[in-house]
Amino acid sequence: MEKKRPIKVLVAKPGLDGHDRGAKVVALGLRDEGMEVIYSGLRQTPEKIVQTAIQEDVDVIGLSCLSGAHNRLFPEITSRLKEKKMENVMVIAGGHIPEKDIAFLRENGISAVFGHGTPVKSIAEYIRQNIAFNL
Image (cartoon, rainbow, N blue to C red; front, top):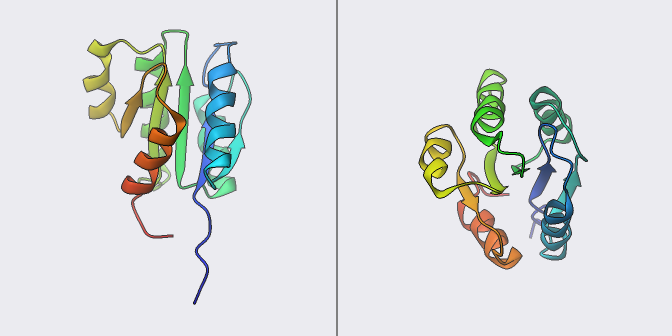
């Protein structure tokens, strides 16, 4: 029987946000859940995030934003993914995201938004259940 490869996740911090504790907790937690995780580091541009996703051939991008720029940065990333024919990459998000912004983000390609305190196991389960293809 052929062994399935692990789900590959890029955890990224777009924009000028300098706080990454939550992103690191999620990255380590997803790794502990058996996923292969790449952490991009702080202050990444949308272009760099998409380029890293392409180079690393990821299945999921997890975006974290605490600066309030999510309504500008996240749709720019999903738009760039479309331009590169990467619509099969699932994009999820977390950080300081007001409830009123979630519908807008979902309409712009964000599959799910996870609030503060969401258990990593819940995020991992969501990824496993909603990945666009079998690995």
